[in-house]
Length: 299
Image (cartoon, rainbow, N blue to C red; front, side):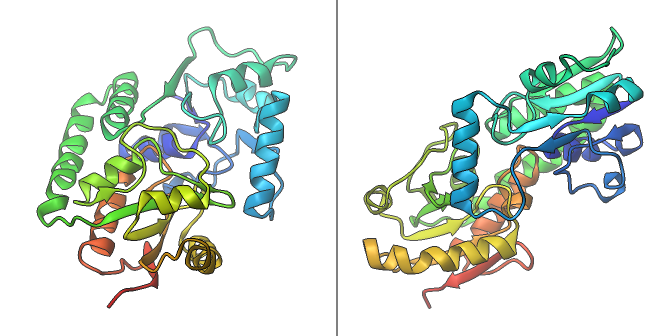
């Protein structure tokens, strides 16, 4: 079977099932599993590299207003591969290629996908939704039993996280300029970590916040999980907003930066890692090497 993955989370889930050898192309944003990283890129982005968060936000807003997709699909590459299975998503136009993007990108391109090509659109907004997407992929490749074993392991880990809990109110920011609230599975991760979500409930959508909204949420602690960024960048973003939080709303609680790519941004079982890292940071007061770092700590 020949598989093309058009988003990082799908490539990650394919790796979980041991499908790396079936992958023929991946998205330009894929960074795991390592064995797939040399494959050709089937997608691109209209957003230039090196922009600030505000510039990225403005670029996205302009594209959405104009009805333009943020992503491109290499139709000629798909035509040469003639994949049996294409993995994409319908959850967020900002995050990755959607089925609509595929259709628009292939219009006018000499691309003749086989009639039997299957497109799986992942739409998980919660741990259970991620599980369902994973099983859809497993069913398509005939690996349901393997998926059941993998899921059982992650489920056990998820349910064991909050053996200690805390009444601490935690706000996770998915963007800082402007600030964005946590959405989809992130409030669920906070609760699984044995904490209280200061803003947002499981399944809700992320949205812009004013400083007054952050003050109204009354967070005891804030985590920086800017979507699409790793630990180093989020540490830098956290340091940039720390003074503003202190000056404008008097926030003096714990401030922690996280590797959002590996723990929060993607609908994969890495959300279990994220809940574990949250528990370590805000319940046990510990950093996890490579995944979290305290910008401000209350000792």
